[in-house]
Every structure is written in C-alpha cells, then in structure tokens.
Length: 279
Image 1: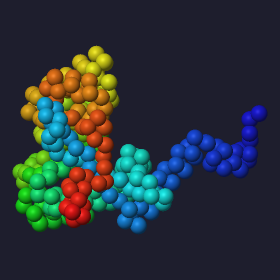
Image 2: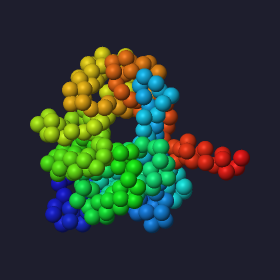
Image 3: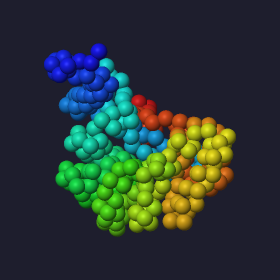
Image 4: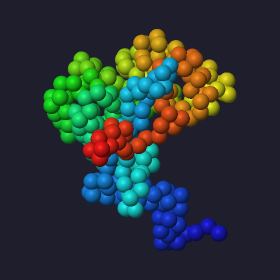
C-alpha cells in the first residue's frame, strides 16, 4: 500500500531511512566519545616500531599512533574514529594533540626518530602550525628526527598545497611519508611533484603476499616506482614470517606490523626508565 503525504510526514527519520539513521547515530556516538576523551585528557600515543628488512632486530623509526580512552578505560585506536572526525574541527584538534605529544616525545628522547600522522586539512590550521613551529624552535634536533605521514587520499584533496608545504619543511630537515600507497587515489601527474621521502605500501597488498602472485606483481611495481623517485620504502601490516622474508627478498627497505610488534602505549624507552627508577 502506498502511503499518502500525510502518512509520510508523520514518520520519524528512523522509519523513513533506517540505515541512514543508524549510521548517523553511530557517528554521533563516536564523536561524543572522542569529545569526552578530549575533555578528560584521555588522548595518548601508541608507538609501533618500523624495522629494517635486512636486520629486523634494528628499529629504523617508530610511528606514533593516536589512541583515546573511552568511558570504560578501553584503548580505542584511531582507525575506529578517524573517518567520523576527519573532516571536522575535531579532526584538526586531534592532529594538534598527536603532534604535540610526538614533539614532546622527540624532545625527551634525543636518539628517537618518530613519524606522526596528519591530515592535509591541518596544513592551514593555525594551532597545528603554531605547535609545529614552537616544537622545531625549542629543539633544533627535532626536525631531522620528525617524519610527517600523510595518507594518499588526504594528500590528493589539496595536492598543490601539500607540495608547497612539504618543500618548505623539508628545507628545515623534516621528512614526509606517503601513507597507504596503492589505495587508489594518487594521480601520477602529482606524484612526480610530491617528493615524499618515504613510501608506505598499503597493507592490503602485503597480508599474505608470499602466497599471492597478484599482490607480488603489484608490490614489485610500487617498489619500482619508489626506487625510481629515490624513496625509502616501508611495507605495512606485515603479519607472517614468510611475508617478511619475501618483502626483504625483493628489496623493501623496512617492515611494519604485528609480526614484529603491536603498537603500545608503554614503549621500550618508558619501560627502561621505569626499570632504572625501580632498580
């Protein structure tokens, strides 16, 4: 039976479009959770090592990954909330906090090299730029130890701005990593202009690569591109010894994934300091 206009007008949003309503409610709940974590200062970084492919016992650098604690104290990774906040000011604030915490860690650990994720949308955000400028001025060694990671999809929202921004900071010693490469967004017209220092191959091509001939071909192609443009390579989501061996064999520079270590909010330098204090 077809409802008349009066019947439709009286329906709730949930009754009219239950899927959209459910998605909106989920997004609202996620945003409220992140806002509550910010208000209570329950935002932190988890650190995951990126190891040398030819010497996996040696860490090349760490990635600082944003985490929040929900009301029950659970650690919530950024992947569970970043899509909902990415295009909002909340996303810019979280970028600022990640950068602040990353710069503080670099200042406290003079031997550390650390990558921090950012959105291209934060390039024009005053607080983020002020945070970066202050951190670089406070410690002259930080710039050469800081890596800023920009996802492939984010970089392509404002490619010209990203190119200009990278050029300015690379002159000061900061390095840049193109994250999630292969996800399908990069225009090769812009790729030639980006001059990223590090290319991180998206994990969808890496999981199970030792047994996947298609992903082997695609990864070799991405590796060839990186080598042509003199870019350091990192394979993400390495989860098995046979995959690590294959990637090292084809010439990938570094490996990142649960096979080596999960992200932790208690990195090795904190454990060493705790042990020294208790000794």
